[in-house]
Image (cartoon, rainbow, N blue to C red; front, side, top):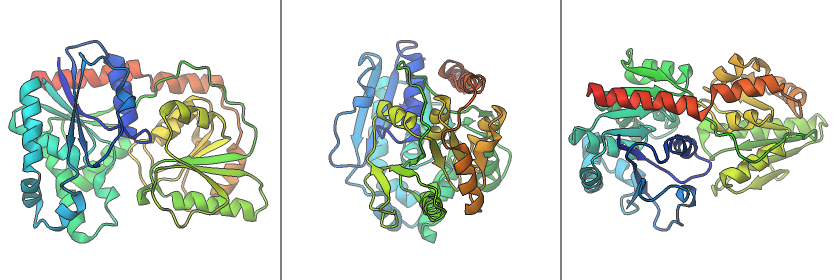
Amino acid sequence: MKIATNVTREYLGGITRSNINFMDSIHGKYENIVAIELNSKRYIQGPRVFHHFSPDWFHHHIVNIHDIQLLKSVNSSKNIKDLEKKYRPVINIIKDILKKDRPDVMFLNGTYYIPWLMSIAAHELKIPIVLRYAGVYSRETANFKPKARKIFSEIEKSFQKRASHFIFPSRICLDVVEKEVAKKEIKNTFVIPNSFSIPDQNFVFNSVERRIAAVGRWDKIKNFEKFFEIHKLLNKQGWKHESSFVTGDAKIKSMPKTINRFASMTHGELLEFYSSQGLIICPSIFETFGNVAMEAVCMGVPVLVSDTMGCSEILKIAGLDSMVISFDDPQKVAERVKKLCGQQILPKQINNLRKILSPKTINAEIMSVLRDAVVKY
């Protein structure tokens, strides 16, 4: 079976890590991967994140779309059909790629405009589509202007008529999409968490120091302002600690100068970073899963996540309920931070988490869904 999929190269992105884990598990198997990357930047470096894949197996297509700026195109469009016309040259390029490589199925990650463009191309060529949710975009654009918010909502809803199968990384995500996006029960849904690839290196968590950190892109829905607030509250209470924030190159005026800021890291560097911390904090307003938290806790590093994140379900199953909290009450969060920072996680709990999130198991489930989509199309 030949699989087409959208790929990204952002190390901090959940889509990148989930896709790499998936492709690692099937590397050299099946016919090959048709990887399509729509690049919105004029300049990019080579994709080191894909260098370990055989070029005979990993067919990497890069389409530069920096000449069609998304928000400018959205704001100048009357509706979603108008926006589609602006991107028709890009859709046609994708169709040419698909005609040449002839994939059996399109495996899309996320409901942003790039998967949307690819879904149109695949649908027009009658290629079955499986959509894996990676962020509910209607939630992520809640602070946009009404017109842009409406168009992005229509983009997300449009997947309902093109995709035949849906993979959700959590029950929380599925419930939100059915209630707020589809507004009905969705057929052919599968709840499959994102996987975590256990590193070859023997990372050992032994930090007893008061080090707390947050990791992720600077975005309103990630709620990192709350991390800043907790840091300042802990200082006010006299709880001496070191705080760090790993993010992209966004300008952040509200970040306290007492927090260490680090640029985006490779996956290996991130794992090293996790192992040096006493606690990883994820205060997202909403998140379909939460790769950062799961990677850290699978290495034995304590985490504290919002109860509106999909990964909170996995932590509860593993008996780590204390690592899930509502971030509405800063005082309670601060007390939980003090309790969890540097705390050891039982080996049995770590092993259970690794079994639940094993790439071998999870990606076998994904392959089963992909095969079913091809057979039933």
